[in-house]
Length: 391
Image 1: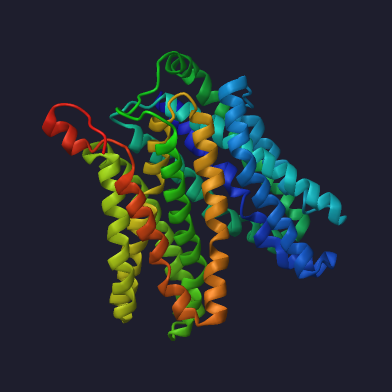
Image 2: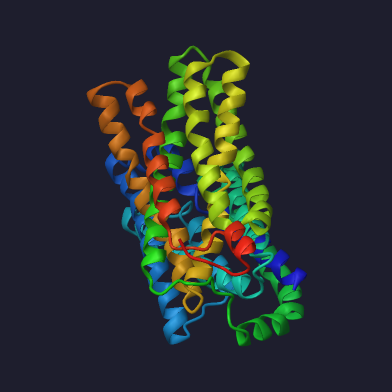
């Protein structure tokens, strides 16, 4: 089982390398192919919409119709079509390749995360899920750097070399997964752990809305915090470095969150971690210098630490539809959350950047309220009473 989890986490890292490549190469596409800002932006929109909003459908087809696309094939499709965007000049071909790459990306997550979920137990679900999710976070961070190095050295055709990591990963998966396939089949034969007293799918809907609000806060922070730091007198280099450190701190937070949620309870962790992010954000506003930056990193740790735990909760709320749950949490919730950033943009245009930044905790507060009301057992209460109880 350990080899299987390792292989899937590594595959997630490689798959998510390709996701941020298109935004990273937009300046070159505009300069060399003569695209307008609108047409260039539509490429990214097509990729993001396709990836985000097809994942739930693919997950549902996997759960209900047995449609399963190999993680190796999904990964390879994504890599090939991202790489080909560097060697074609026809806009409609580039658009088609963006959509096909996004479909490969969308097919990967429900299948891979379903396998991960089936190999977890109630005692380690948070920890194991966090390993898989963090693999994707690392890949997303590596992608722009790798694409930048390739196009700097070889121009846009250098993107073809991005196929190499996918080829290596396909080979690695064939070596790692066969040893774990017996465990995968055995896991599929065992019913997934289900939390007590969850009578309908409404708890999952509540979790989804809370996750959308959390994603809104995450994307708003990523988008506007560097601008705010620059407006406060920090250099662009410092602001970008702080953002990178906040994302890396968030990666550490996800691993820590998975471990802690296995021990103290998932609902407990979600409520307290999200609630803890709110005062940290306002302390960031009230401080300055090194202390201000340290508080911002702590804010990132708390906010990002809840993502993998929310995914683990979704699997326990929909034990018979883990593909659908995975598609919603890694696709739909993130996609809708990203749309919320436009609201902060309108606030910035109408009032000020500071006002837009100051509203970031509001969706977090909404997520805290929903998580507190979510019909999901409090682990500490269950221990005290000798059984699991809903809220």
